[in-house]
Image (cartoon, rainbow, N blue to C red; front, side, top):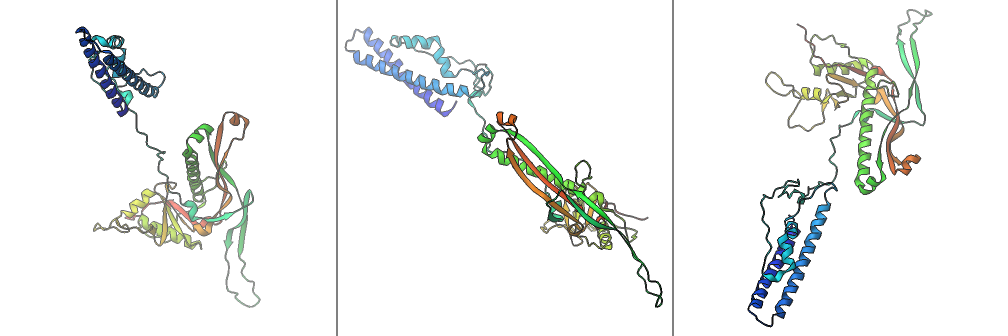
Length: 397
């Protein structure tokens, strides 16, 4: 029962008690044959009016509360309503001067149940609503940040890439002798601008009535777009409208040192060397968060952290290069390379949100389309500038 119900019920109880007392007094004086009871009759009438007004107000409040439920829900009668509907109360109201009284006998415990059983008062309670929308966490996106940025006004990017080089430079043995001839080979490369997009439909009414929903939908659409973009830049296969990512084009890891033993952290240094041997100094490493955690938690034979520091706040680095962790990279896999020199992203249309009711059917049905879209191309100029492989320590017996 709400505070308002309680206050009105108390007020009604006082008014009923007053009517009851005045009725008993009036009946007694009339039985004694006393005269001059007209003033007392007026008081009884005023008390009856007050009691009826209190009943009306309590009825209105309870009707409002009943309307909060669904149309099919069976609402349990309140205590006051049960009292008003009782035959004793109806007899009392019809003849309050006879000295009688109306009583209500309760035979059930009052509980928070919402069924139609006696004593069910759960319909009087309403849930507390937490404002806003609780959103799931977003994955950190960083692959694009590693790659050189560019723009284009075309639907494709074309460039010439050196694919072969034979270096036969040598000293001329004697004046007039034939000099050495070297060889260069080139290929034209073309990458097409690709479109990444998705949309959500919503009714105009819900967007009007929930002002925060439109911006929330736009934020979630943009996040979903960037999540796919991140994975495309890294792992896209170049088929069916996909970008051709860096990993499918990168050089396979090959140890140029011939070391007999190395750890997975040593392996990243060797991959860094492999990129340098291709004349493209590496600018970063990409790892799965699980693999980076394993490296940070690695300890020496005395239990001391090798690279990790539980109290450290420095940016993750390995062998002087930044480490980017993303779940777009598979577990036990790595990518090391010259991201700033070996590849470039070209934006034809930067990611944007558009809202429209384009077709007639949506216009008639008050449907709104919220679209998130971008167009871009990825050019990997030098695949040998990137090294990828499986993280695997080498141990020779």
